[in-house]
Amino acid sequence: LDYTVNEILVSNGAKQSVCNTVMALVNDGEEVIIPTPYWVSYPQMVLLAEGTPVYVECGIEQDFKMTPEQLEQAITPKTRALILNSPNNPCGAVYSREDIAAVAAMLKEASVRIGRRIFLIADEPYRFLAYDGIEVPSVLPYYEDAVVISSFAKNYGMAGERVGYIGVNPAMEDADLLM
Image (cartoon, rainbow, N blue to C red; front, side):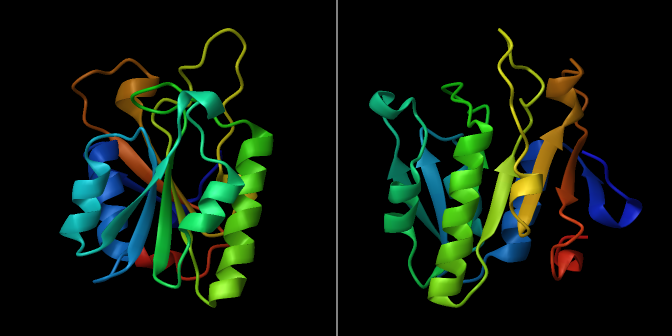
């Protein structure tokens, strides 16, 4: 991924970046979809923003990945965002290009149907820690209203060095909400 100065914001780690993004995008009573299993801090960040976490159960029978059908069922007129973590912490599930394209298509369709933008908050701090030739694509090329969050600490073995970032799609309308 390549960013310009106007498309990236450096922070004190990925956790701060996720929280800042949720605080900037989510308003009182809006819903944020969180596939399970999930990183323990996501619901608390949504609650801090006075939003409502909406959980989508993703079991072993589906490789711990949310299906487009599950996403469609979870979306309501109050949906503001989806937090997608791939590779997933804690279970390691990886969304393929096809998975991400299907999720992006469902979000686009649902945004039109409910008449409001739905943001995709992609928490990707483990993206470069895939093994056995597994490809871990970013969501950024697939969805205009995507916000990518990552960390140098995880990807470059810099434990304790709290450096993360928020990257936005250059085509995203109102990207300055986050910058």
